[in-house]
Structure formats: C-alpha cells, structure tokens
Amino acid sequence: VQLQASGGGLVQTGDSLRLSCAVSGRTIDVYFVGWFRQALGKERESVGSIGWRGGGGASHAESVKDRFTISRDGTKNAVYLQMNNLKPDDTAVYFCAAGRARNWRDYARPRGYDYWGQGTQVTVSS
Image (cartoon, rainbow, N blue to C red):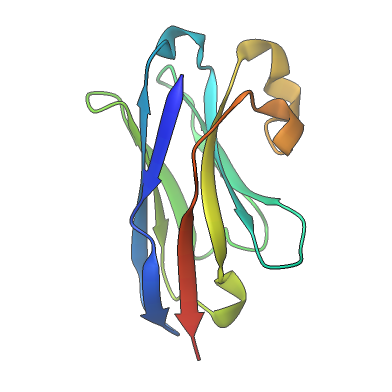
C-alpha cells in the first residue's frame, strides 16, 4: 500500500486548505485511513480518521473537530482533509496513513497504522 499526501502550503490565519491523500497498491488490506500531524519538536498527533471500505463515518480529534473535516472518495481511492479557519498552531507536517483491520482499536494512535505517506507541510502565518 502506498500513500501520497499533497496540498500543503503557506497560508494566513483564517484561511482554508484541503489536503489530499491518494491511496494505491494493495488497497484490499486497508481498513481505515487517518491523518496525523507533527509540529517541529513535538510528537505526532492524530487529526482524525475514516473507514476505508464505505459506510464508516469519520472521527476527528477534539482540538480540530469544529474546523477540520475528513472525507473519502472511493471512486478515486482518495481521502481528504478539509481545514478551515487555520491557526498558527496548525503549522505542522501532515501525514496520511493506512491501517489494517487488526489494528482498528488503535485508529487514533500512530502505532495503529502500517502504511505512511511522506507528509506535506502546512504553514500558517499570523
């Protein structure tokens, strides 16, 4: 399974940005896809996740649930992260990752994911 995150960039406070995650390869192994972020000097944290095989809703971290939305397009094998009202604290490298069914209990933890994309930088200026 390969994941490719894209869509990052430099924006101003209050702007919106949509990240995309293209999933390819042996997608039959994928049970859920998550977004994580890692700011400089900090640990990687979950932004949210969504079921991959249809019918499953998305869950979002408390810190972003009023501003960020994860969605999926099964026809394109893609997952998106819509980020609104961005703040400087949202500055980080954003990663998408895919997890297998056996790890579903760890959907909010990095250890629950077997496959990772390369990350895309999001910088929010004040």
